[in-house]
Length: 304
Ligand code: NAP
Image (tube, rainbow, N blue to C red; front, side, top):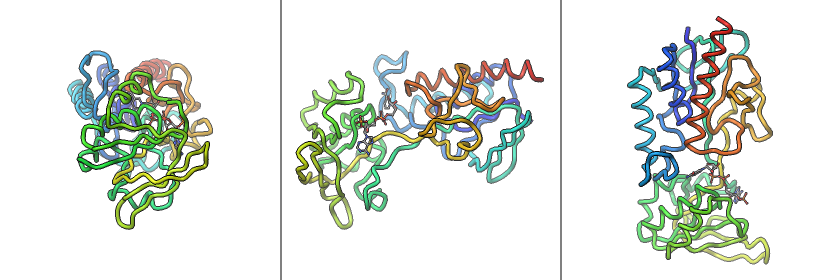
């Protein structure tokens, strides 16, 4: 029986693992694919304190894993398929076995949102991508489009501008949600062009992306952008599908917690991008993981 099982090994999960290990808790981290979460897909992280020149997302996440393991954290690659969260002893069911634990940290993070265009899924790997860091290098000297106006879209555009001949940023409004510093950085790149008030209507090209049909929402005008790649960066969806009937979430599936990251179920905590909060950054995910373990220590002292 574990003191805590942490589901997900992104920034929140790995920080929770580090704090749990340092508190001498019997802790287990379960991760379905590989550690790192969202941040492992960021080519550079420029706003995590202590890295004045930035740090690559993959390097930062691997350091977090190394740090947690060095302190004694146990991380296993296993896909969690069931949660039994009622009562003092909770069960976490994976494809291989069932684990028992007194507390759980839900740190499954979030995944990318799709645009919902016809042939979008079919064209993944043939010009449609959700990860500029992973796929950018395939688009050397080609024209590409980034869809979205948040931090991810602006960071992706700057990253892609190093490979691509031209990067169009297609945004549905004429103001960006992204941090001002990121917008300013993108505006300095000569090969980035902004296409405002516009949405993608369709993907053109039989076997690979050759162009996008774009609709201007104000003028209703339809135009064609000749691009070989479309990078979709229109936000994230919390990975809370398996627990939405067990803990309270908001309408979008973000898990509601108190200040100590406790959910509506006793002994169950949520941390990182899966939790309802105003700011989703590496630094807030790390803080959530640490806070959840602090709360769990108190919970175990009161209930054991
Ligand atoms: P986001 O902040 O939710 O932005 C999504 C963008 O896509 C918005 O501009 C939105 O437009 C647009 N959009 C949404 N649905 C769309 C649709 N169907 N069609 C066209 N456009 C659509 O998502 P994100 O940029 O992935 O960021 C997610 C979280 O991670 C945020 O909290 C962000 O701050 C954080 N993040 C931080 C960093 C960093 O600090 N360096 C880097 C990456 C991400 P509207 O603006 O009109 O809604």
